[in-house]
Image (tube, rainbow, N blue to C red; front, side, top):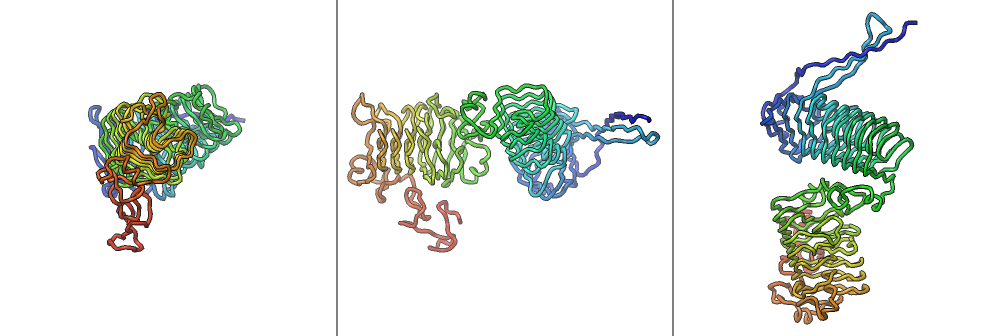
Length: 621
């Protein structure tokens, strides 16, 4: 019998593209512009000195399978500008951007039925291509086998310096596809995430199958992996590298928490996987993988343990991992504010996946409406000197967070007594507790260690939450008193051991805590109204302060507090509020709590008692 013969034929083709609209220069695009294009759209390249930059001006929607871009030159930057492209109603979508291609087929010799030739056709990609600040959102869509939601299959093949940075995607992954880039890809992906589902084997949360790229500070929250799939890289990947990456997926049989099955010579550093590990699977490598090294990597196998994570991972001091909540998140995804910023609820909602909020040198953030925080990572972290948080007479409701660490961090993410930045100010801000508890040694406004910052100032602030856990404070948690607290009050009961109504710390200079009061009932062991007293010095550790122990007496308050003439304290309500907080007319009382007592609730027409109610921010509910 004549043997069956297989030959390999490798073909390279030139970049001859026949498509739609051609972009030759840097361009700003929006929905109207995109609607005017013929698809797919070709982007011609720039020069080494001047890249062609495509900037997305607003969120847009694609609903046709031909809605994608073709890279046709070096030096191109596609900047999503922190906007979203929604892929709506497209099955087997090939991905948003094409840069090269790889096709394989089997061809039978017409003269010899026993001979088959594998024909591989490669269209080389272009170099120096950057995709950044982009979210792809899938609605009733899935991505084609082997492709990626943003980068198509074989993106930048045989090219160099391909980079995806600050990108994210959701949606279903078919066989061999990737959450960010498709298979057979060797680019670098940084600070990127995937939130969708695996419905096919060999798929990866960031890279598709057969990839050899680099993932840095990336993660996948896919609920489960497909057969031979990987949390970061798909199956059959080789010479790939993952650094500071993690996945939360259930690791099914033959799959891997970081690299998929049959991967070879892949290296992981400072990565973790959370999911339960199935048969012939691994927390880092999938089944039948070979070669490579995993250093400082943690496989939780469905049972996360902080102590084990801390002893295995590096950067748990806040340099890499944000350990405020478990399992840990990457600090590289935090929002960094480096210029004066106005914050409202829309701003908070738009940054929900980029928490906490880091404040840089001499930055002032101004809160312009009452806010709701309902995530333990919703807090401000001071990361340089001279930071100001101006509450502007507004409140922040802390909703249903167990062991909240407090609104403002200064120093490190452990909240320990480490060095902190100097010159910070928090003023004119109220904290409303709605079903939350405060973590031990923390304060509702200043986290544990906040007071270590030299010259800090907290003024005209209040909280209404209970101090239930050990060492908690109504304003400031455990710390040194390196600054001042003035014109502040707390309403919550003081029930935790060594808790305090104002500052859960010792104060050795009385002037540093002044003109404050605590109204809560004191029942905790060694708990106190204002702050812990210095027994060696004797006497009070504060000036002009009042402790009511649950029974507010206006005569006692007036004899202790200053500014009861209306300059600081609003004495028309009991207990007193601060005049820094304007009288509220939208159905909430002077402490920011929604009520009909002594308030007027108006509709959008200014009439009382209408069905269309205006809320405390003056907006229609």
